[in-house]
Length: 262
Length: 95
Image (tube, rainbow over all chains, first blue to last red):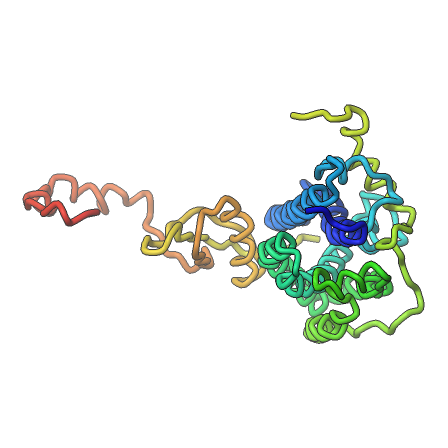
């Protein structure tokens, strides 16, 4: 079976989100705020990279040009990546510092906003006409529900915690919120795949996402931020400045030693 | 300034249905709900379990190692307390 160009494009959008966020979360390895959280984050990172591997391998088979998961992950340049921009932002947040300034509130809020979206996406894709994708969705949904649980619990603890934790999670939310609009942006690819019952119309996930997110934010004593006109465009291949740095680290080995195995 | 330490919890894992929960370690967490979730991440990454219990370590009353002799040694020579003189049918496993 060969897939259309649009089908491959759609799969890359699905795969690059967990791939790039998994890479960002892996940066916490050995630097988590407590041993238990360090392990939790690396578990989640590995879940996400595992999801990306399955979807990329599937895309490679459908494409039929001999590209495997590694070719997609390690030998594409930034402009060919299709992740939403929120997921490539540094762990310190959109506008701040380097790895040393990594902010746990940013990681928790990003994981919460994204996994809440991704869970709805997998739920819908479990009924995809693409049987392989449906199977991946069913498997991944269990993992993603746990990611939602983990991030929601921490969002509530930090939001409804001390003055300092509340202020930091509020700042993280304000910084990340404008990037969430991109989850629901659609173009001809999304519409064609939704029409073919392979994909899901992103806009159809917005109302349930808002409801789920608002419920947790309320419990966390946080206000739902007001909508902004800002629109990020990573899923259409137009990224911010940060993705290049993610790829430089992630792809270094395969760029320096092409085809290297160990 | 001292950072208050999260309290310690003991973690018990049931490896499969029908077996009992076994103590497998401990961890620090702010409360029981967090301890349960963390136990999942720390102790069941390699499919070790199907059920988890967490118990505040402070809730456990332990025997004193110094009174080990008077507590346990007197049982050493009471061989008649062991049910080893019965012949068991083959069908009875795990006695």
